[in-house]
Image (tube, rainbow, N blue to C red; front, side, top):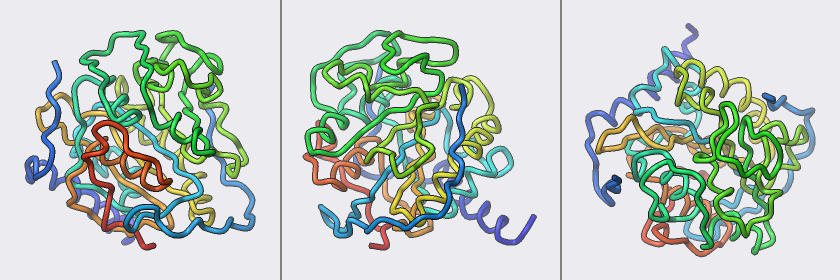
Length: 307
């Protein structure tokens, strides 16, 4: 194995390994709860001017953010042996050694990340419907854009609870019927011209690709096939990739892997204690949006930005 890859794997292994030994850290305790497409790297083109100054503190305002949510893995389970692509990618960016889900099971975590609240949901029952504010609505009201891309979604705007390996419980924007149906898209609708991506895109793999029902190695292969093009493009087009997991495998600590990669992200591990509300707060602060729900008491991700 080349020296660079060994170093990358060692860096993330150390960062993720700390999760098992560091405990819960400080801050908020985890909440108690009862057709495939790949993004090919496009031909080189001129990078857009960066939006530059942060809206809050030292945060950048990227041209594009892509948030990818995998499923049900403890941080130490995503290892270099089973996930060489994801661990190598994490070593290129900021890997959070004290990241947490906010609940068990899956569905309330997706709602927390998208709306600043679990909305009182304590299970994976479907359908759910809410009328409150959410990240997509905020972005649209501010003149920006949002799209959620779900692998296996049978058709744009589909509101059914499931189809094959697609599960609505992992697709929180469907639960807010005031949003336009156009924000709910299959993964196959992800634009080949990456400059057409929305301001913020959520990408949700299906139940196999997200490691819920299949192995870590399967999810890692999916990540390599679907994310490498965007990562390469983002380096010269002011983009950020956020990779996180909804929850761990059921522990009270709820430690999960979370990392960011992009040209404005300083590589290295971060010991900041974070959860889904902190990630949401970061996305909102990037674009001057008021924090929703529990994100108001959260802290944006700090100490990882180069500008």
